[in-house]
Image 1 (tube, rainbow, N blue to C red):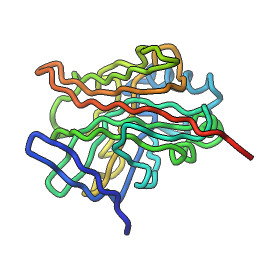
Image 2 (cartoon, rainbow, N blue to C red):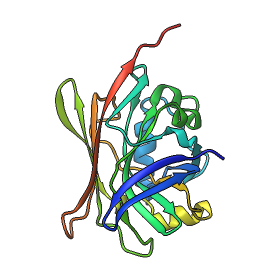
Image 3 (tube, helix red, strand yellow):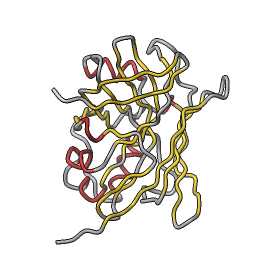
Image 4 (cartoon, one colour):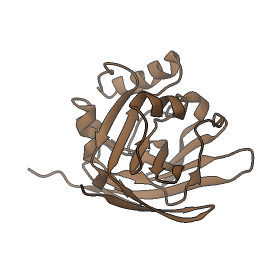
Length: 222
């Protein structure tokens, strides 16, 4: 089985992970109102609602990258900040990521749209216990659009299902598995950007997991 090698800086030193499975948890809002809000956001751009919540989409591990530059086909994709769990032989780590997705393809197949674009992860991570109360951690994304920075997303982990519930709902995470765990509402509607800065911040001590990447749009030809 092929593996994607990811490397993280952690408080305990560098960690290298051979990733063999990538899972994107979708529709992970903790309450019905939050889920309905996200469904409405996507409905505005033609994306049908889910058959059940949450849903677990599998993606090729080759889609996982730790880069500050991505290339996408056409101008219909966008990212979204997410907590990301990385399962290793020595335990779980938390990092920040972006579930970059082709929104045009998403209108006819969410599963296919997940495979169309890279899943961008940061290069720093914290060890994490799913038994800890993580609700106060803050997710934030800032988009650069036509040269101007705009607030794009902000919200706490309290807006999404507890990560333990997501992992249990999937049946657990074996070592070598990466799970993207869902997002928080977008300010001003889902839209493409030229650059996306994403972060997870712990307000208790001010430490953060941060990453940013530029989006290069390639032409669609036929």
